[in-house]
Image 1 (cartoon, rainbow, N blue to C red):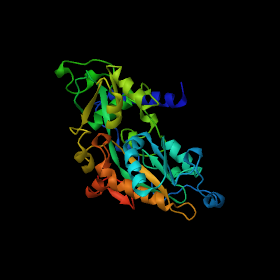
Image 2: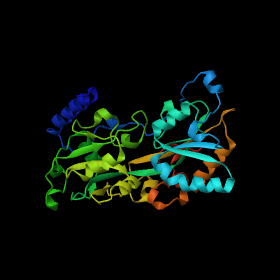
Image 3: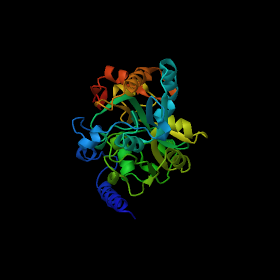
Image 4: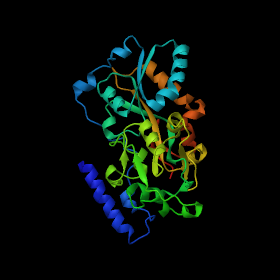
Length: 337
Protein backbone atom coordinates (compact mmCIF):
# COMPACT_ATOMS: atom_id res chain seq x y z
CA UNK A 1 0.00 0.00 0.00
CA UNK A 2 1.30 3.47 -0.85
CA UNK A 3 2.23 5.81 2.01
CA UNK A 4 -0.63 8.14 1.10
CA UNK A 5 -2.97 5.14 1.19
CA UNK A 6 -1.73 4.20 4.66
CA UNK A 7 -2.28 7.73 5.88
CA UNK A 8 -5.82 7.71 4.47
CA UNK A 9 -6.39 4.34 6.20
CA UNK A 10 -5.45 5.70 9.62
CA UNK A 11 -7.48 8.87 9.01
CA UNK A 12 -10.47 6.70 8.12
CA UNK A 13 -9.93 4.55 11.23
CA UNK A 14 -9.92 7.70 13.36
CA UNK A 15 -13.20 8.83 11.84
CA UNK A 16 -14.73 5.36 12.32
CA UNK A 17 -13.85 5.39 16.03
CA UNK A 18 -15.14 8.93 16.36
CA UNK A 19 -18.41 8.03 14.65
CA UNK A 20 -19.19 5.49 17.35
CA UNK A 21 -19.28 8.35 19.83
CA UNK A 22 -21.01 10.97 17.68
CA UNK A 23 -23.44 11.31 14.82
CA UNK A 24 -21.53 10.27 11.64
CA UNK A 25 -23.20 13.07 9.71
CA UNK A 26 -21.84 15.69 12.10
CA UNK A 27 -19.59 17.95 10.04
CA UNK A 28 -15.82 17.74 10.25
CA UNK A 29 -14.26 20.47 12.37
CA UNK A 30 -14.01 23.65 10.31
CA UNK A 31 -10.25 23.78 10.84
CA UNK A 32 -9.97 20.39 9.11
CA UNK A 33 -11.90 21.49 6.00
CA UNK A 34 -10.48 24.97 5.55
CA UNK A 35 -8.51 24.27 2.38
CA UNK A 36 -8.02 27.48 0.38
CA UNK A 37 -10.14 27.84 -2.74
CA UNK A 38 -7.68 30.26 -4.34
CA UNK A 39 -3.98 31.07 -4.15
CA UNK A 40 -2.56 34.51 -3.37
CA UNK A 41 -1.89 36.44 -6.62
CA UNK A 42 0.96 38.27 -4.88
CA UNK A 43 2.90 35.03 -4.37
CA UNK A 44 4.95 34.41 -7.53
CA UNK A 45 7.12 31.54 -8.68
CA UNK A 46 10.77 32.55 -9.03
CA UNK A 47 12.75 32.25 -12.28
CA UNK A 48 16.20 33.39 -13.28
CA UNK A 49 16.88 36.54 -15.29
CA UNK A 50 18.03 34.31 -18.15
CA UNK A 51 14.65 32.57 -18.15
CA UNK A 52 12.79 35.87 -17.98
CA UNK A 53 14.71 37.22 -20.98
CA UNK A 54 13.96 34.17 -23.10
CA UNK A 55 11.37 34.79 -25.87
CA UNK A 56 8.40 32.58 -26.75
CA UNK A 57 9.37 29.81 -29.17
CA UNK A 58 6.58 27.58 -30.46
CA UNK A 59 6.87 23.81 -30.62
CA UNK A 60 6.47 22.05 -33.97
CA UNK A 61 2.65 22.07 -33.82
CA UNK A 62 2.64 25.86 -33.54
CA UNK A 63 5.10 26.66 -36.32
CA UNK A 64 3.92 29.45 -38.67
CA UNK A 65 1.10 30.41 -36.29
CA UNK A 66 0.46 33.94 -35.05
CA UNK A 67 -0.85 32.62 -31.72
CA UNK A 68 -0.19 29.25 -30.02
CA UNK A 69 -2.72 28.01 -27.46
CA UNK A 70 -3.05 24.96 -25.21
CA UNK A 71 -6.36 24.32 -23.43
CA UNK A 72 -7.69 21.70 -21.03
CA UNK A 73 -10.23 19.30 -22.52
CA UNK A 74 -13.33 21.19 -21.30
CA UNK A 75 -12.04 24.52 -22.65
CA UNK A 76 -10.88 22.89 -25.88
CA UNK A 77 -14.38 21.64 -26.64
CA UNK A 78 -16.15 24.80 -25.44
CA UNK A 79 -13.87 27.39 -27.07
CA UNK A 80 -12.73 25.76 -30.29
CA UNK A 81 -15.52 27.18 -32.47
CA UNK A 82 -15.14 30.64 -30.90
CA UNK A 83 -11.39 30.59 -31.60
CA UNK A 84 -12.06 29.56 -35.21
CA UNK A 85 -14.52 32.43 -35.56
CA UNK A 86 -11.94 34.87 -34.17
CA UNK A 87 -9.35 33.50 -36.59
CA UNK A 88 -11.67 34.04 -39.56
CA UNK A 89 -12.58 37.57 -38.47
CA UNK A 90 -9.03 38.66 -37.70
CA UNK A 91 -7.13 36.75 -40.37
CA UNK A 92 -4.75 35.47 -37.68
CA UNK A 93 -3.39 31.92 -37.76
CA UNK A 94 -4.09 30.25 -34.41
CA UNK A 95 -2.72 26.84 -33.45
CA UNK A 96 -4.59 25.07 -30.62
CA UNK A 97 -3.81 21.79 -28.85
CA UNK A 98 -5.75 19.94 -26.18
CA UNK A 99 -4.02 19.29 -22.88
CA UNK A 100 -4.34 19.43 -19.11
CA UNK A 101 -3.38 21.83 -16.33
CA UNK A 102 -0.05 20.01 -16.17
CA UNK A 103 0.43 20.48 -19.91
CA UNK A 104 -0.30 24.19 -19.55
CA UNK A 105 2.16 24.59 -16.68
CA UNK A 106 4.90 22.79 -18.64
CA UNK A 107 4.36 24.76 -21.85
CA UNK A 108 4.36 28.06 -19.97
CA UNK A 109 7.58 27.12 -18.21
CA UNK A 110 9.16 26.18 -21.55
CA UNK A 111 7.72 29.36 -23.10
CA UNK A 112 6.09 27.43 -25.94
CA UNK A 113 2.64 29.05 -25.95
CA UNK A 114 1.03 32.47 -25.83
CA UNK A 115 -2.10 31.24 -24.02
CA UNK A 116 -2.52 28.31 -21.63
CA UNK A 117 -5.76 27.00 -20.12
CA UNK A 118 -6.30 25.71 -16.59
CA UNK A 119 -9.34 23.94 -15.11
CA UNK A 120 -8.36 25.04 -11.59
CA UNK A 121 -7.26 28.18 -9.81
CA UNK A 122 -3.50 28.56 -10.26
CA UNK A 123 -1.02 27.30 -7.71
CA UNK A 124 1.85 29.58 -6.73
CA UNK A 125 4.07 27.45 -8.99
CA UNK A 126 1.86 28.42 -11.96
CA UNK A 127 2.34 32.14 -11.33
CA UNK A 128 5.43 32.57 -13.46
CA UNK A 129 7.04 35.99 -13.94
CA UNK A 130 5.19 37.86 -16.68
CA UNK A 131 2.17 35.50 -16.70
CA UNK A 132 -1.28 36.92 -16.08
CA UNK A 133 -4.41 34.87 -15.36
CA UNK A 134 -7.86 35.62 -16.81
CA UNK A 135 -10.93 33.83 -15.45
CA UNK A 136 -13.50 32.81 -18.04
CA UNK A 137 -15.97 31.43 -15.49
CA UNK A 138 -16.79 28.49 -13.25
CA UNK A 139 -18.52 25.14 -13.74
CA UNK A 140 -20.49 23.22 -11.13
CA UNK A 141 -18.84 20.05 -9.86
CA UNK A 142 -21.81 17.67 -9.72
CA UNK A 143 -22.14 14.84 -7.19
CA UNK A 144 -22.85 11.59 -9.05
CA UNK A 145 -24.41 8.30 -7.90
CA UNK A 146 -25.59 5.11 -9.59
CA UNK A 147 -28.89 5.65 -11.43
CA UNK A 148 -30.71 3.17 -9.19
CA UNK A 149 -29.76 4.94 -5.96
CA UNK A 150 -32.92 6.42 -4.36
CA UNK A 151 -30.99 9.34 -2.83
CA UNK A 152 -31.98 12.68 -4.37
CA UNK A 153 -30.17 15.08 -2.03
CA UNK A 154 -27.21 15.06 0.35
CA UNK A 155 -25.98 17.77 2.68
CA UNK A 156 -22.41 19.01 2.58
CA UNK A 157 -21.92 17.44 6.01
CA UNK A 158 -23.17 14.06 4.74
CA UNK A 159 -20.91 14.25 1.69
CA UNK A 160 -17.86 14.98 3.80
CA UNK A 161 -18.77 12.10 6.11
CA UNK A 162 -19.19 9.80 3.10
CA UNK A 163 -15.95 10.72 1.34
CA UNK A 164 -13.95 10.68 4.59
CA UNK A 165 -15.27 7.20 5.47
CA UNK A 166 -17.43 8.06 8.50
CA UNK A 167 -20.56 6.94 6.66
CA UNK A 168 -19.92 3.54 5.09
CA UNK A 169 -23.35 2.27 3.95
CA UNK A 170 -26.19 3.98 2.14
CA UNK A 171 -28.61 2.73 4.81
CA UNK A 172 -26.90 5.16 7.21
CA UNK A 173 -27.98 8.13 5.10
CA UNK A 174 -31.05 9.92 6.40
CA UNK A 175 -34.27 8.92 4.64
CA UNK A 176 -32.87 6.03 2.58
CA UNK A 177 -34.74 3.34 4.53
CA UNK A 178 -37.99 5.27 4.16
CA UNK A 179 -37.52 5.19 0.38
CA UNK A 180 -37.32 1.42 0.20
CA UNK A 181 -33.78 0.88 1.45
CA UNK A 182 -30.46 0.81 -0.38
CA UNK A 183 -28.16 -1.13 1.91
CA UNK A 184 -25.12 -1.21 -0.34
CA UNK A 185 -21.64 -0.40 0.95
CA UNK A 186 -20.67 3.09 -0.17
CA UNK A 187 -17.85 3.10 -2.68
CA UNK A 188 -16.46 6.67 -2.95
CA UNK A 189 -14.68 7.41 -6.22
CA UNK A 190 -12.20 10.28 -6.52
CA UNK A 191 -10.16 11.85 -9.30
CA UNK A 192 -7.60 13.72 -7.22
CA UNK A 193 -6.07 15.63 -10.11
CA UNK A 194 -4.01 18.82 -9.78
CA UNK A 195 -3.12 18.05 -6.17
CA UNK A 196 -0.94 21.14 -5.83
CA UNK A 197 -3.69 23.52 -6.96
CA UNK A 198 -6.41 24.98 -4.72
CA UNK A 199 -10.16 24.66 -5.21
CA UNK A 200 -11.99 21.97 -7.26
CA UNK A 201 -12.23 18.71 -5.22
CA UNK A 202 -10.54 20.41 -2.27
CA UNK A 203 -13.83 22.22 -1.62
CA UNK A 204 -15.12 18.79 -0.56
CA UNK A 205 -12.15 17.68 1.58
CA UNK A 206 -8.89 19.61 2.00
CA UNK A 207 -6.34 17.06 0.79
CA UNK A 208 -5.96 13.48 -0.33
CA UNK A 209 -5.20 12.22 3.19
CA UNK A 210 -8.66 13.30 4.40
CA UNK A 211 -10.37 10.86 2.04
CA UNK A 212 -11.47 7.37 3.04
CA UNK A 213 -9.01 4.48 2.82
CA UNK A 214 -11.72 2.85 0.68
CA UNK A 215 -11.55 5.62 -1.94
CA UNK A 216 -11.27 4.31 -5.48
CA UNK A 217 -8.85 6.67 -7.21
CA UNK A 218 -9.26 7.09 -10.97
CA UNK A 219 -7.06 8.99 -13.34
CA UNK A 220 -9.44 10.02 -16.12
CA UNK A 221 -12.93 11.43 -16.56
CA UNK A 222 -14.23 8.34 -18.45
CA UNK A 223 -12.98 6.15 -15.59
CA UNK A 224 -14.87 8.33 -13.09
CA UNK A 225 -18.13 7.97 -15.01
CA UNK A 226 -17.63 4.24 -15.61
CA UNK A 227 -16.79 3.60 -11.95
CA UNK A 228 -19.99 5.27 -10.74
CA UNK A 229 -22.10 3.66 -13.47
CA UNK A 230 -20.73 0.18 -12.73
CA UNK A 231 -21.19 0.01 -8.94
CA UNK A 232 -24.56 0.39 -7.22
CA UNK A 233 -22.94 1.81 -4.09
CA UNK A 234 -20.65 4.27 -5.86
CA UNK A 235 -20.52 8.04 -5.47
CA UNK A 236 -18.24 10.43 -7.33
CA UNK A 237 -18.10 13.91 -8.85
CA UNK A 238 -17.53 15.60 -12.20
CA UNK A 239 -18.56 18.70 -14.11
CA UNK A 240 -21.92 18.39 -15.83
CA UNK A 241 -20.51 18.56 -19.35
CA UNK A 242 -18.29 15.53 -18.74
CA UNK A 243 -21.18 13.58 -17.24
CA UNK A 244 -23.29 14.30 -20.34
CA UNK A 245 -20.35 13.51 -22.61
CA UNK A 246 -19.45 10.09 -21.18
CA UNK A 247 -22.68 8.79 -19.58
CA UNK A 248 -24.23 7.70 -22.82
CA UNK A 249 -26.28 4.95 -21.21
CA UNK A 250 -27.84 7.18 -18.57
CA UNK A 251 -26.41 5.05 -15.77
CA UNK A 252 -25.25 7.95 -13.61
CA UNK A 253 -27.56 10.25 -11.65
CA UNK A 254 -26.87 13.83 -10.52
CA UNK A 255 -28.09 14.67 -7.03
CA UNK A 256 -28.73 17.92 -5.21
CA UNK A 257 -26.48 19.32 -2.48
CA UNK A 258 -28.32 20.98 0.43
CA UNK A 259 -31.37 21.16 -1.83
CA UNK A 260 -29.55 22.94 -4.67
CA UNK A 261 -29.03 21.37 -8.09
CA UNK A 262 -25.72 21.80 -9.95
CA UNK A 263 -27.87 22.42 -13.04
CA UNK A 264 -29.01 25.72 -11.51
CA UNK A 265 -26.54 28.22 -12.97
CA UNK A 266 -28.18 31.10 -11.13
CA UNK A 267 -27.71 29.32 -7.78
CA UNK A 268 -24.08 28.59 -8.66
CA UNK A 269 -23.45 32.25 -9.52
CA UNK A 270 -25.15 33.32 -6.30
CA UNK A 271 -22.83 31.07 -4.28
CA UNK A 272 -25.55 28.65 -3.15
CA UNK A 273 -23.94 25.58 -4.75
CA UNK A 274 -20.65 24.77 -2.98
CA UNK A 275 -18.56 22.72 -5.44
CA UNK A 276 -17.12 24.08 -8.68
CA UNK A 277 -14.12 24.29 -10.99
CA UNK A 278 -12.57 27.51 -12.22
CA UNK A 279 -11.73 28.01 -15.90
CA UNK A 280 -8.67 30.24 -16.42
CA UNK A 281 -6.53 31.18 -19.39
CA UNK A 282 -3.24 33.07 -19.37
CA UNK A 283 -1.41 35.76 -21.27
CA UNK A 284 2.12 37.14 -21.20
CA UNK A 285 2.65 40.78 -20.29
CA UNK A 286 6.44 41.07 -20.00
CA UNK A 287 8.43 42.75 -22.79
CA UNK A 288 9.65 40.18 -25.29
CA UNK A 289 6.82 37.75 -24.51
CA UNK A 290 3.68 39.86 -24.90
CA UNK A 291 1.74 39.09 -28.08
CA UNK A 292 -0.87 41.68 -29.05
CA UNK A 293 -2.71 39.15 -31.20
CA UNK A 294 -2.92 36.78 -28.23
CA UNK A 295 -4.16 39.61 -25.99
CA UNK A 296 -6.94 40.29 -28.50
CA UNK A 297 -7.91 36.61 -28.49
CA UNK A 298 -8.00 36.52 -24.67
CA UNK A 299 -10.36 39.52 -24.63
CA UNK A 300 -12.53 37.94 -27.34
CA UNK A 301 -12.84 34.66 -25.45
CA UNK A 302 -13.64 36.40 -22.18
CA UNK A 303 -16.35 38.51 -23.83
CA UNK A 304 -17.91 35.54 -25.64
CA UNK A 305 -18.18 33.07 -22.75
CA UNK A 306 -21.74 34.29 -21.93
CA UNK A 307 -22.92 33.15 -25.38
CA UNK A 308 -21.29 29.71 -25.44
CA UNK A 309 -23.57 26.76 -26.00
CA UNK A 310 -25.33 25.96 -22.74
CA UNK A 311 -24.25 22.31 -22.66
CA UNK A 312 -20.70 23.40 -21.76
CA UNK A 313 -22.10 24.85 -18.52
CA UNK A 314 -19.62 27.66 -17.87
CA UNK A 315 -21.02 30.47 -15.70
CA UNK A 316 -19.21 33.55 -16.98
CA UNK A 317 -16.94 35.87 -15.02
CA UNK A 318 -19.34 38.70 -15.93
CA UNK A 319 -22.14 36.90 -14.07
CA UNK A 320 -19.85 36.18 -11.12
CA UNK A 321 -18.89 39.85 -10.82
CA UNK A 322 -22.57 40.81 -10.71
CA UNK A 323 -23.02 38.34 -7.84
CA UNK A 324 -20.20 39.71 -5.72
CA UNK A 325 -17.37 37.26 -6.41
CA UNK A 326 -13.97 38.84 -5.84
CA UNK A 327 -11.60 39.58 -8.71
CA UNK A 328 -8.13 41.00 -9.00
CA UNK A 329 -7.94 42.36 -12.51
CA UNK A 330 -9.36 39.62 -14.72
CA UNK A 331 -8.63 36.83 -12.25
CA UNK A 332 -11.18 35.35 -9.83
CA UNK A 333 -9.52 35.33 -6.41
CA UNK A 334 -12.41 34.83 -3.96
CA UNK A 335 -15.99 33.62 -3.67
CA UNK A 336 -18.96 35.70 -2.49
CA UNK A 337 -19.52 33.86 0.79
